[in-house]
Image (tube, rainbow, N blue to C red; front, side, top):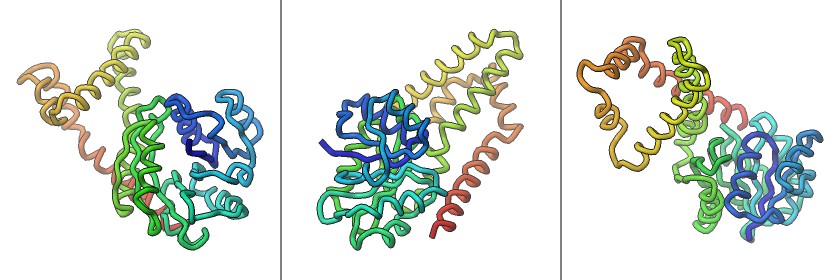
Length: 271
């Protein structure tokens, strides 16, 4: 079994650990590096994983996952670099840090060390994530297959050129927050129109689950499915007319473009 060291016990690090354990990955082959003692204890209690220092976690790991915030990557990588890394075997580094390019790691790791950049999202916590992989200069086919195998156990995986990762970050990395915001707004509107919050929440959540399942399984596009629900002159048409009047499409375009530019800005600062 592949031994995985997760450097960083925040939300994404926890989501990966939780998803891997739920997918059947042995707890003995997972180790987490977390410097904040209360958080370390919380993770150890919740998942029965070993939580230790970065140097100890990385020693002997096949896959080193950097799961810290972009501002903390420099410190984390400095600690990783204190270990005698071996790029000649299947050992590789996987970065989940938004905006940090593979080149940043490559110039700070031993020559030829393989780096895979990944943009995941938090639904991996329930095995329904989606991760985009981008290979660094020294990544071989077997490295990508290894990372794909690890991450496919917590959701779907796509491979993209690194030039597209900032857009992926804006669409799927930040994407869950957009859906949560829409759900929040729909629940609040339902309450304002007379439903209890519990009833509005149940209706909205299951509607989103069902709609996502149709989009995933029906083979029809989002446009086709939306049109099928929108009878001429009906209630859905009235609602969509208001969305269009208030610039919903433009708002999403502007939001995703802003997130993409912010991801690119984070990358530029880390170079």
